[in-house]
Length: 625
Image 1 (cartoon, rainbow, N blue to C red):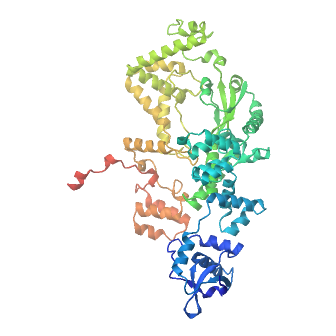
Image 2: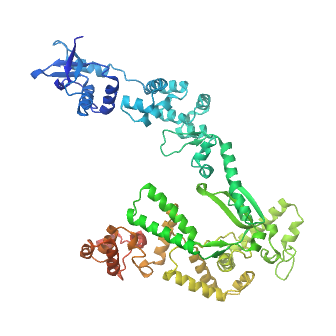
Image 3: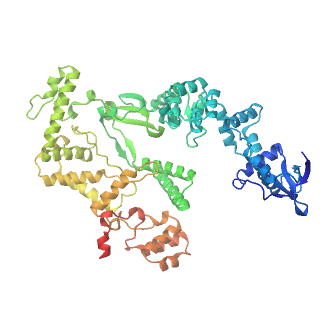
């Protein structure tokens, strides 16, 4: 070999180099490696004209050296060790030999080599700087190197894919890794199956209970979290479920003390809150007290902050502002409902359940009355004093006879009766309509403390914040008052009252109940795609025109959106020149002028426009006519 020191600025590419594609790939990484470790393999060069030297083999190394010179990591004329080729040596053959005969390192060997560097005390950042990659990639490769050596050998032998190997990194137990691979049938060796089986005894970090306790509190108590370095969105697995359960129970017990101090007849802690189990209870509802001056001030402050965020960011909020907005909306919803006030007699009769709800939120269900605690004056329909069920005319019904029978037989017989009731109701549209209207009207007109219905229909009448002064709310309130003056005073009389009325009355009341149950509100913390899609279909069926119910005033819309949105509204609702005339105004003046221009134009933001259905579009024949 003829080794010579040649200045970098004298080295040029050789036309005989056989590498045509991929020469520029990974140059920055290679440059970082050369900077850290030096040039490990000499360039193969031959003399050229004008004192230059052509690089026959080592084109990527030359590009990496030029990159270092450009970054001023080395001098432009730094001396580079090169092997000077003789005149009789074929440049193309040498270039081909270097690129073809060379055997690339297997990725598994690279993982292990990285681990060897880490074992000598080098951290991920140091290794990353030497090899031109990110510390995150180094951590991933180190994690792959920690998988069982037996599985790494399978990967080298191409009996295991890289995705499968990555899945095994969720566990550090080599014995468990090897056992799982041996037991899994070939058709089920999917990466997701491997992850699921290796972590089935762990708890995911986004589990409701984990969110309730908090990762920081869990770790502070000595719990370990295992991360999946190959899934950036996944927050890891909590490896000590027993500790998590203990921490959750301790916090629930602490929270329960404040609820117990309220004086409820009983209190039960249910960490895994099952809403189906709550159906056995009769629910009481509190009176809602108007907001105090402090609460109103808090509500006003939150509303102002809400509007400021919308004004600053519009619809495209960064993550931190979006999280703040979500918290504000939740607080606004809670405050808008007012302060619940429970009656003393309700607290003495009912109990409360405390548990973990959706997304790890502390959930407290108050005002639950056990069936056996129901007072005589408020029995379920058909129950007389003393607990005996009576039919019309005071004759003893099925309940009393059933009480003397074994519980499983009672359940079986009442199931048979329920099936028969369903079959009979199926063929009687009139009574079906009465039963449905009765079930829906009870909570709307008689509050929560009313006789129950055997139909498992639950009507929810969500509070619509900010609509109190709207014409739609006025219409609903007026209709409610009209019905309330017509309906009987006692909830127990509603059934007989409905039976005595005609179908037109039933349908009228049904329409009101259905109207009160509509909820197409989109909140930032909810997934509501299906509800909104159905609301669109309902709007089409009703020929809804929001221009009859809503106007683009400053308070309703314009003051809450950026200037660009206001000008867009004027451009759409009036014309382009009107928008241009307002473009230079400051925000407050722009809002005032835009409100005047848009008045009575019928302009609506896209969110309030009636959806266009395929049925409303002209067909091909119509267009061709």
